[in-house]
Amino acid sequence: MPQYRQLSAALIAEAEKWDGIRAGVAAIDQVLDGPSYKAAAEVNWADDHSEQTTPWLPNARSLLVLAMHHPEDDPRLDWFDRGNTAGNHRLTVISEALVTWLLRTHGVNAQALAYQVERGGVYLKDAAVLAGLGVVGKNNLILHPKWGPRLRLRSVLIEASLSASRPLENFDPCRRCAMPCRKACPPNAFRQGQYDRPACIQRLDADRSQPIDSGQRDSDGSPILVTEWCRRCEFACPVGAKP
Image (tube, rainbow, N blue to C red; front, side):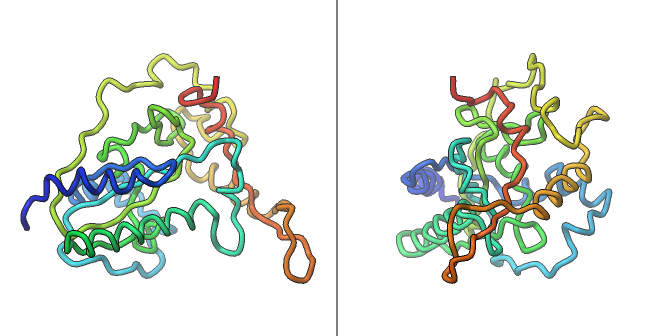
């Protein structure tokens, strides 16, 4: 498979034409060799691998990683309603548009991946680090230099071997931070000094069981209830916060 060095830059530029989007490219073999896949293999996270995965594009070599800004003052992007969120829908539209652009403009096959690993997605935090979009902070979230953790991720699998982006250098925002993110966590998911995934999931399950009124009405006039996910650690993080 030939190298497409110029295509990598063109693809990133095309992706970043969308408002509030930043993009980078990673080699898929490096993503699959990342720490999240290794950890999943060690602990056998059944909930991540219990469903049938969507088959991937054969001979894929690269991964376009998209980061969408999700500011604190736009909570609707993350409201879970009828199996989806507005932010997730927007990222899906952008991903599919880029798949079409790659094939139509450059004759390169691509595949928009699902968010969930169990449905054929990838571990997006690992991918985002490799694509130069941020670093993993002490809140276990990707920290973008401008947006901090207030972002959402998605990826597109690409058949061609594109020139990969470089991971960020000299960006270590948690080094001397007092870690207000950990103190803000309602389930105290960092009480052991590292991220406690089950504790975080328990809080998300509680959010799901207590939907809120979106202020919108269904066709029959009844209120549309949505899930508002906990974002306390995001909002407490000083990186990228509004002054």
